[in-house]
Every structure is written in C-alpha cells, then in structure tokens.
Image (cartoon, rainbow, N blue to C red):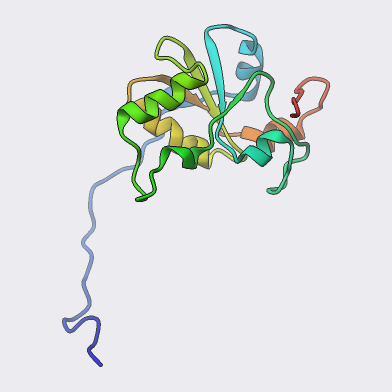
Length: 152
C-alpha cells in the first residue's frame, strides 16, 4: 500500500478574490412579467424537459413553465466529455429555438442555480441576458391569476 500523499498537509494561503454580484444580470418577477409578450424578449427555461412539461420534482407549488418560454436544458450545453460545448455549437442550439444576439434573454430554472450557470455562459458569449433567480420557486408560489403557467 502506497499512501496518497507522502508530504505534510498543504497550508492554503488566503487570497484577495472577492465575489461580487452583478445586478445588471438580475431580473425580478414583476419586471419579467411586464416584459412577457414583447417580441424583443426570449425566455429560456433551463430545467429538464419533464419539469418544463409540468412535473414538480423539486418542490414547486405549481407545474408548467412561464408563458412563451422555450426549453433548453442546461446539460445540453455540456458535451459527452463533460466540457462546455464549442461556441458555434452553443449558438446553433440557441438559434434553433429563436435565440439571437439581438434579443434580450431571460433565463430561469427552479431556484436560480442552473439558470445562473447558463447566464454566465451566455454573458461570456456576448448575449444580452438576465437571470431570474427567484425562478419557479417564486413564480409558482404567487397567485396563478397574476403569474400564470403554461403546460405541455
């Protein structure tokens, strides 16, 4: 048996990296609701297709998706090798559902994590994108009469 490490334990040194939230990438529920139906806007639901269709495996109050949203599962942007797809492959997936660089994009999921990841990818590629961090947990908990959902 050979030990995994033969040297003493590493002592990490403190760095100066500071995590900063960028509010220009955020959108709130009422702001998103007011923009629904605008042709300049495309809403991307990054959840699994079953969630988009109406299943609620993660505690959403109601099932479905935000009206007019397109479903692009976030894992579809990751190749079989576990790496992010090439820029041209990502853009092709986006264009296939009408997402172009001249449109404002809002991304959401269940609780803002998956959509936050895709937001960072799209920002890096130069798209105009905002993350709806409240996502389905917030939208589905609000009154259905004011915050409708579509089902497949």
